[in-house]
Length: 146
Image (cartoon, rainbow, N blue to C red; front, side, top):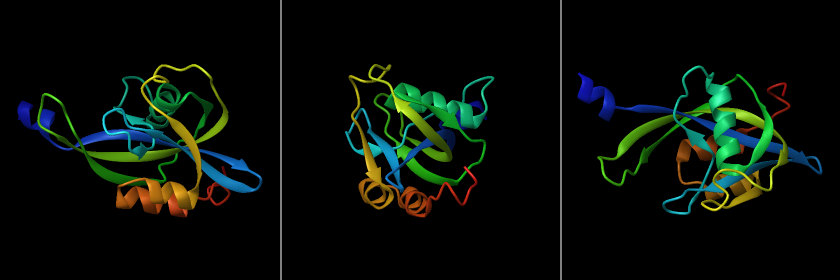
């Protein structure tokens, strides 16, 4: 049982970091450390933190985001996390919106990742996961009351 829990489906929390610029909603994508492909910031649950707070922490660490997270899951997507020295991990990511106030010039993973603003349509075209593409295409902060 213990081995199954370690190797089974894992949960992560992701941040859909957004801003409204010239009346267009834009999202911030970061590159993954291993492959350099475009992703949203995401990471493991953190003891004592809500899922939305954990997503905000990941947005700060991976993209230098200073912002506000919202306690509403706007979607789920799955992917396989490639592990260097272990079996790959199947993961499901719960996505939480993060309204970006500003981007910090220095942040923990600045030398390991790139970050860039995209329109919703272009962001959806850059990510690999089909469910995440759909979340990005359909995201509307005004509909959510954010």
